[in-house]
Length: 432
Ligand SMILES: *Cc1c(COP(=O)(O)O)cnc(C)c1O
Image 1: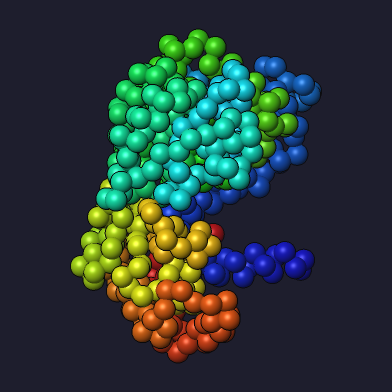
Image 2 (image 1 turned 120 degrees about the vertical axis):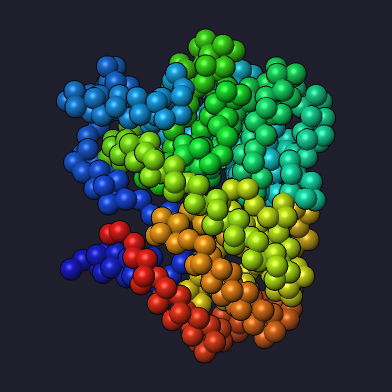
């Protein structure tokens, strides 16, 4: 057996026996993965349905059109591009498509407070294409609307972005739209994290307010790694060429040939997302996150946004005596896979931040509900309290971090919790 297949076996075991609580992760269905592993992989299809640069695309045209129709129906939009390879290239294409002059500015949520790299952050190529200014969050985890509006009036941005990788509130689409209209900006909603919640009705849709909506397809939407860019009715009213601008920005602007096997998988996930079962799933994601948040708050965890209204719990660990790095590693040794995260007004660094981010989409796909959330909250607290009592230091030196990992990976208490986690996971097997 090729080494790769041995690794697939090990990764399957890992995904099955530990709790995946990274908010952007999920388990795609066996059907989605079957479509992704299909012979569509072999086909080159540069261009769009009915206008390809290669022969042999009659079936592929039908596939891409089917995928487009499913997006239009599920989200209620007049135009969609299903070719973006992932979220970051999709955002690059949007920026390229909307850019009219080198003087254009974009306005987005700042990286250190949950913004995403691909919305013009300084280390991203999206900032070279269109320089950016950023708004932040208030201390209680809400968008800083006053700052956003002041920056919009001052800079007259071409794009106002909504969306980030860390945000625990319901997005107030109408407020973004009002500010964008006031300054003549395009309002682009990046719903990468909450795409599935919007599809399932567990979060209000930005479609009536935004000009363009982008979502990745692999997070709460539970499909293959990819992204889609939707142009809304409102977008076409603002600019009747917006659909063409986006399409030519994706291809040939940013990409070459589309990944047809991914588009096949996206089409399958869209059919799955357009069911009562998915509606229930997306509601359960939020319910689970709220219970998890509530349990943690009772145990004196400081939650950004004082809880959650979506799939994510965002914790500032400063009062617990550990940083996000130590907590995330200790949790991994105990079978709980989370990710460390900066917090608003971060005092430490992005690599060793003060916070932690937990999400419920993947464990909800496994069928876990309220009782499991309570148990998981207990484990998380056990691990973090124990880790804090072992080190009680939020500013470890490099040497201490090395020792910490060597010691904690063999720690008896963490191994015991990892076994308990594994026992729980056995009752909620993943579909492979
Ligand atoms: C995940 C994410 C992206 C990027 O998606 P990739 O597929 O990782 O490139 C962009 N924007 C937001 C808000 C995201 O959460």
